[in-house]
Amino acid sequence: MNALARAGWRTVTLADFTAPRTTHDAPRTFLLTFDDGYASLAEYAYPILGDLGFTATTFLITDYVGKMNTWDVRYTWKRLGHLSWADVEHWRARGFEFGSHGATHRRLTWLDDPAVEAELHGSRTVLMARLGPEAGHAIVYPFGALDDRVVRHTRQAGYALGFGGVKGNGDPLQLPRVPVYCGVLLGPGRCPVRSARRCPRRAWENGCTRGESVCGGNVFDAGHRSSVIGCY
Ligand SMILES: [Zn+2]
Picture 1 (cartoon, rainbow, N blue to C red):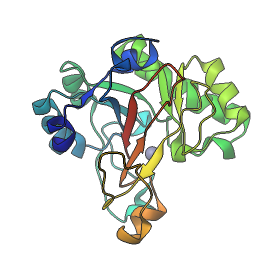
Picture 2 (cartoon, protein in one colour; picture 1 turned 90 degrees about the horizontal axis):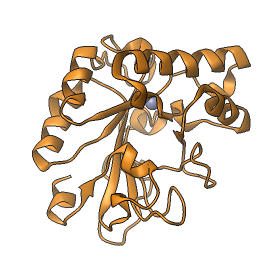
Picture 3 (tube, rainbow, N blue to C red; picture 1 turned 30 degrees about the vertical axis):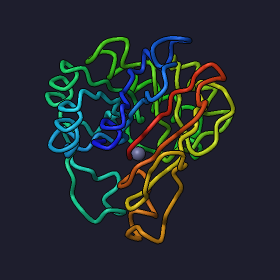
């Protein structure tokens, strides 16, 4: 982030990213996202970003806000805390944004229709009740897993933006992200790529637990030149 700031990059908000032909058309702008909403974001990442004048959007697992990570401890073998609602509201007041990462981080493509709807509606309802309607605009699909059925439910639930895995198709509910894990080097003109060899095995196996992801290029439509950087 320091390198990006020194190079003249700046972040855009979700609203900027969504709106066509606005400030985020400017070069060297990017949307920064975090998945899962671990408490360490408020401890380490947000203060650094704030000092740089950056913002970010964090996608929360709404049933785990303020709780420990029982949903992924089998991957991490570490007990990690999630952001509390007080944390969320504190950083929201400083310009940080929040969206949905499901209610329980279940893989939506493996669920039946009622369970998919419960994940999508449940998390969105909680977010909007706590944070206002803007918190119901975007979702990151847990594990980046989506298919036509999940996208249809997501649209019906009221989301306008959906971030998935490495592939997109131009649909705002199927925006791509390219995972980048620890040890990956970024530089001018260099597209971030996976680098499993440099990563701890568990980090590689569970991309939602540790690591970073970056989406670059025309991720929204041909009129948008911003990059999207996501960390999850
Ligand atoms: Zn996740």
